[in-house]
Length: 526
Image (cartoon, rainbow, N blue to C red; front, side, top):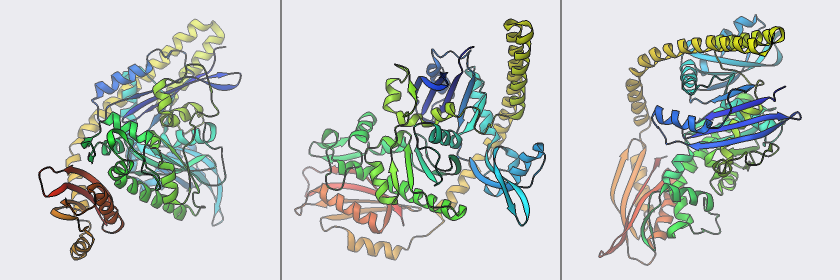
């Protein structure tokens, strides 16, 4: 009998991850773990070439399962209650219950669900389900992308299910009664997931990303060596080696850049991450009437920022840990490629997909599931009667039906995409207007604060406001203290009173001038 081999795929916006597990002596063994970085917003042909490169050397003809992770900003995860009903009516009932949480019309989403048990409400027994919904268009687009590489997944699961599978079966903590949080900081975005008893029951997107943190570190800084601007490669190195400096020691970064200067560049994004994570955890506790989350695990590329766990622990008041993603999984020698080893925290979802194959909620369109199941059953029956050759022929026939159905789905997606594309400019324009005019600042308070809090060594030359975003430009005079010290104090003062997400955009030392330096600081008005 051929060994059971399951391939887990996580196709992200900036990184593609692959994990291949093989069942040996009733335990999963890691035979391949790969990670490939892809430029943000790369063209489809570039992403397709990257996927082909990721799969190079992988035998795809003898897989017992191919589980692909699907992530979408409009993913909805909720627990719902419905009365007992025929299986064919459950999906529509779930959509009805979810409609107030959906960002798209119910008829444009696909749902998957799992029975959690029964609950009595006003004397009536109801089914308690864990449901997840994603836009049907996102599913079709994902399947079309995989089909171009010759991949036909047996299971399509949301990232929430993949990470909860990693949490309970991989290197994360095992199933526990108390809610546990997973904060994934990926290249394209950040997501907080809360799991109860090993099931992801809550999900919230947060506006922060690993790529954004790295780019913010490339801002222009003033050092003893003059103006310095780190490259993205240098910033990535500093992110891992220096990161967030502890309060008692700033630490030195690369090319004379201090740890405190690095922190000043990323402080705004980190504050936003902490605030939105804290609000999301509070919302989960209040809406679900569950105990507060007391433990948070960091995964994803952004989790490699040194000192992040300690900083979040102080800000959130909960235990924050950076786990060993592959702990508890047996590995063959050479299974973990060097770049994957360096970015091990990014592999959690792909590993969870492979570990939870067949046990998670399947978002694969029903007709494709039925077609695949029928082809497998016919192949097994013929193999028992006439041998392996005839069975293989019938299996191929079943896959042809699968392929034909998928091509019809892709055609429908193309038509839908053209219709939706015409509406995007109007939607974006409306969003910009709502954001810009949502709240008018108290300008009297703003100017009063600036009048009293600008350091004596500094004076402002310009103040630019765009909606809630404020940019301050100014100069630092020669009055004793260094420009670096004055800027550090000023950004801290702004962050504690006037602005959120304070960022030092640039600072430049001046020569042949009565002033030491000029600077630009930005932030979000409170």
